[in-house]
Length: 581
Image (tube, rainbow, N blue to C red; front, side, top):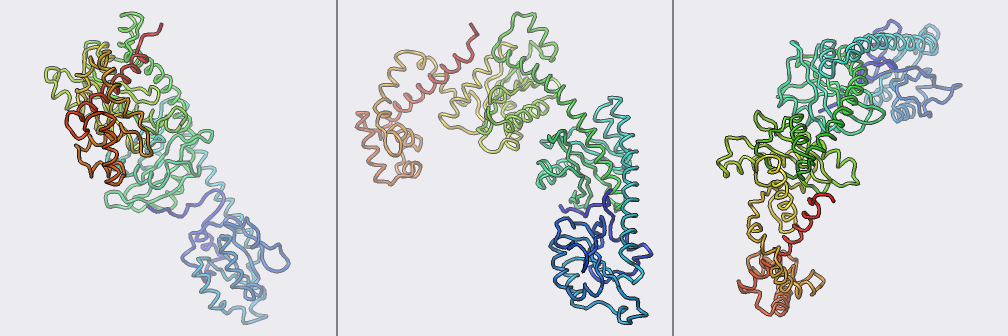
């Protein structure tokens, strides 16, 4: 994707347009490839003037030199003008041809070649094109251009302002911009999600895959990050066709809210049209930003209420059945439905990281949208550092637990993909079994939390269900009993007390068990030499008073570790989920 030269704005006009004027027609002698550069004003150069080249404000200026002075210092002047990004060099024949015939001769070839290499247009002006005449022409054209742009911008703003004042919303605003421009208009939020899309008969409507490609290319270019406020014209490759986009960041009080994108038709687009659409985009972003700010305020209020409802569901905390029924009716939550709870966790979501939490909120919204199909409601909320999704299971799968789990795992895979795109690596999705009604939500949430906590301790795949850890369900009673905990502590205490440079002996024993008793694999896993590994295993066996290489000893260590892990998780959940006193 490449950037195009910016079209004419209220503060500059293209050199190409100036060359069409009688005073400057036919004067270009070098730098023909750079005539698209913008000229904002004319500055005097040469002896007897302020040294314009040494100033730091000549970007976009045409610098005017008498021919005698320019020819004497051409190489040095061109190099410095290039370094300061001057728009053009105007070389004036300071003596009439009738007085000095050589004034009609071309400039030195070396100077012209250098100007071509540097990309600086050089104009050789006749004697009557004085600084006064030339600077007056440039100023007049720039002011005329500014007046034209301001008038056009005023008309566009008035038309869009009428739509905004009626409170018709973002869709109506983009529809108005599409009618004005004759092109398709997209509005994206700061995460790249499509908020509004409007096409015309001329432009057609971009398909979802094309919109995705546009978002990906703009993301790669950095448009979803902080940047300049002015609209930019870029080109992209869309389905093998080069398309022009006018892209403007939607900002309110220096806070980024998204992008406004004008997708030009797949046909040659005139520069004048691009300039008009750029002005329209710059006028439209302020109104789009106000509308997005209003929508965000409403959405945040709705999300706070929804989060409260989801939080109450997860903990089954309602004053009475009447409160539950009233709030369920508001969110169209079927009390006789069957639900499962999914938990999305990521190390990048922390209470002290505002940006990470905002990305997590965006994931919760996306999961809610992706999970809502006819007869299958999805509620989501950010609770602490976890994204919680309450997913309704279709009634057709109620009598087939295996298919129910397959469908939930498929949805969990979708949630994992969209969360990974926004939160990066390390995302984990766990979910509990589906259960009936509001009380079933609390039951599934406890299972999902149990699976999430255990998955971090024992190491599982990125998507894990409580049923994948059903061995823990079988150990639940033992972990809650005094005898079970005493057994676990008796086995593990000697290992936990044997600290060393590479960790305690419990970690050595668990790694050895995880590698199915393979000595070399365990050494590689712990980054130890094979002889050191043998020594560690020997110390482990002495601490256990049994040979760790036997299956009986390995099973006892494995069982003790899992009992303690389950006991810790259960105690934490009991403290969190217990009703308030």
